[in-house]
Image 1: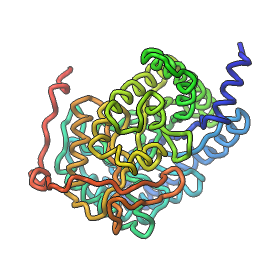
Image 2 (image 1 turned 180 degrees about the vertical axis):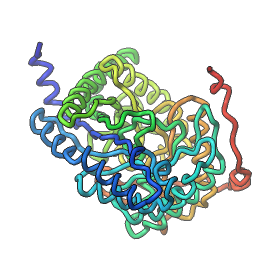
Image 3 (image 1 turned 45 degrees about the vertical axis):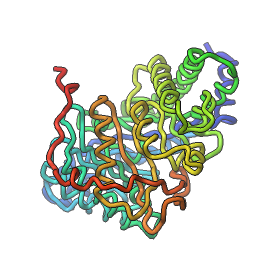
Image 4 (image 1 turned 180 degrees about the horizontal axis):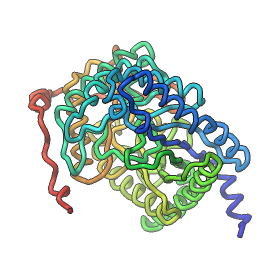
Length: 450
């Protein structure tokens, strides 16, 4: 039965508190497009993407108008291209066909220029990884990800070393455009197969042929709910967050179900992630400050974030049996107004961000670092973050942007949802000897659960 109070509350969330569907992402399997002739494979890929996703943007816009719910991004994810290109080589051709399909479909991004190398390099993996700087420099909509570790497999230190250089080379290749290529590249540990958020989205080989996943966001809604509960106990704070997350998730499930029916594909999951934007009132950092911190990054930040992340997951799971992806709280520095302010003031530093990633979604995300950072230091940052994910059986990731020609304290501005932010200082001491050892960091005891 429709409840007028609930309807008005949802309208207020949308109009005043920045509630939105951050993305509807269509996942498309390209396994049936594999061909030893790269031209033939690319034709199959383009035709399949257009056949499945040609009306994705149109349907998203129709749902926005009918239900009054903003859907910020319409996106596509595909099978990791290293698997598809292994039969033919020449992965750059695949990047170009993904770009063309994204343009013709009208989507914001297409993810899946990816490789899964947590336990070693299969044919096609290393060639694709080394092509990432060129691929991201020559495309505007293609996003790339590489999974270098997992709880079951351990950490591929050779891949960590390679990715440090690739991140740096990608930033250099797009230096003319604020090094934006590195903002479209993420390095994972325990990458999920059903993540609708970029830059890490790819369509896992265990997924259905085609599926719709929805990413919901509402930091402003959570903050507004907490602002009305001054003096509440910490248990009451957790309960408020759970109830708010429940409402947000129900809206995401509605949009995903409708979109799936209209496009003729199954509805996959709701990724309930408090994904911020640079807009005022849409910040995860401000939620933490509403809980009681003077500024995000001070002592107590990790505990407050753990509370927030757990309550979001509990509320989402109660609202839908189809919660998946990353689901939790994102802390991308350049995409969060509160995080940007905290980084500028010095309250939030790289070491504190690393501690925070142990209790929340994703990891070191959208962090601008000095452009003269050695590749081995970037590799070590990736290894540290992967270790947190590996040991804690959770997804972690690194998306850092070396700001070529920009020093610590200065700022880089990407525009749009990618935002802007200060270049953060990093530890100047070297980890080169550690990274250069190579090999495989063994899986932890947590992997022996069978």
